[in-house]
Length: 150
Image (tube, rainbow, N blue to C red; front, side, top):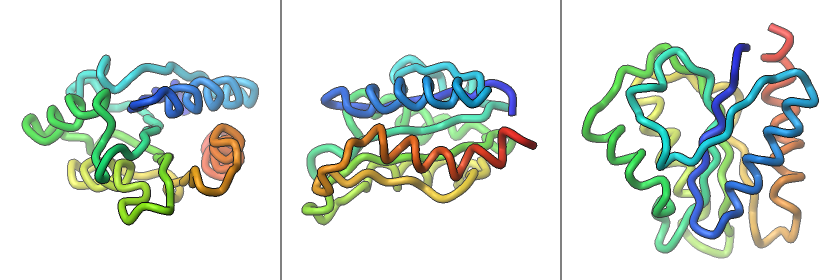
């Protein structure tokens, strides 16, 4: 794996915190990362990249405001993502019917545009009381350890 682009979409800052903590943990395992908000990423620039999507679900199951323009660009421009490999981690609250709908929306769009998902989608449940960064780091260990050795 070359550089991993970690893209986050957040409303309250939790997904950004998880992105930064994951970047530090992955760097400790020899994976070069770059963290940026989805609002700062052009959908057309994703070709050929390895990407980690981290997004929270907001409101009635929507993407957070910072992720909406990125998703809209994917919808309207429909870039060819067949050369993109991605992993996905969502933050949500299982007390809502729309639990982790935000990450499900992005995973569906990325795969529809031809991207290949690495590993299973990871989830944090705010109702669990667990630290979201700890849950994400444990999940990343199962997803990226085999990739790092490839």
